[in-house]
Image (cartoon, rainbow, N blue to C red; front, side, top):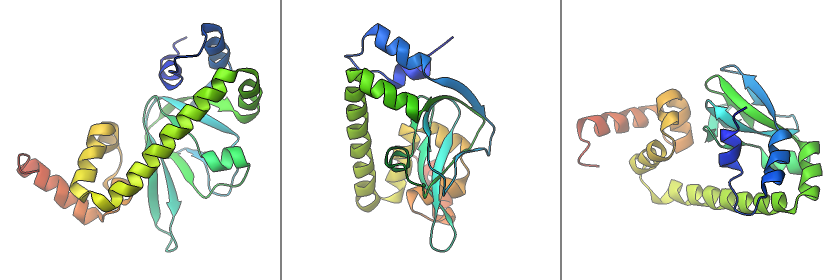
Length: 196
């Protein structure tokens, strides 16, 4: 069985081979269809996932009932709603598959057991969490400091699968622009690529 996505996600210099083997075997392979919810608003997360193949997104409903995309999850990334999983509270977010997805599921109870048993898993967790915190901080700053065009180009560079498979409306809400603005940005990039 190939553990490629797990090997990439748990790439941490201090893991011993036997520790990784135990962690990998604690994951269960699961499949979702396009449109399936991995987590729904109001429910408490009882696991996290690592995407082997496919694309998913998280979104919230704003005060007017509009969907606002909060994140996209691509292959080899951890799909998680941290506050719901670790604080054991109902989530405000939805996580849904944009394409068919193959994932590795890691249940909360098993994670807790191994977290206490394998010190390097705790160290990996701290490292992963700090990287995520940095990424969220960076994104929130870029929403104010970068133009919509630059934010779109960054997304295109970092997660090209999103631009390839996600509907325009979802990408626009993630970038904080209207569908019309995003259409205009894409047209400008196609007709004047050197100017940007």
